Image 1 (cartoon, rainbow, N blue to C red):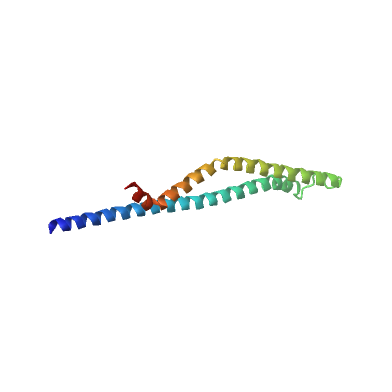
Image 2 (tube, rainbow, N blue to C red):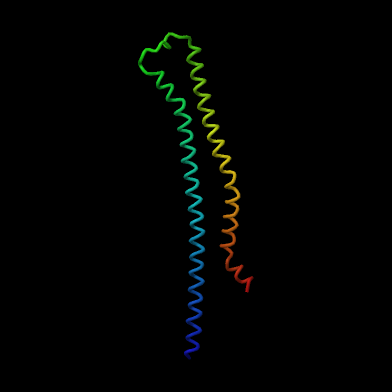
Length: 135
């Protein structure tokens, strides 16, 4: 009688251990999902920051030249204004392109990591099947 209860207790302990491992595996998968969501949020924040920097490069010189202080450009030829505006726009576009290029080349190495995480998720989701095959 005691031997039967001992087996039942061991079986319950094994089930609890397996359940604990499944909870841990599920927690790890959720952590991977949350890491991905956090990375997308950080990437969006970085893109917004890059765009703000590119627009600032244009806005600061324009705001300095547009103050109500006489500087001699008021009576100049309109081509000077359009040349200056085009130059500032070009500088802003180049700033955006350079920083986005650096951002994109840094993210190429992330693709391999994403593939590794997908493979890990696949393995974790089929842990019971793998356990049955290994026995």
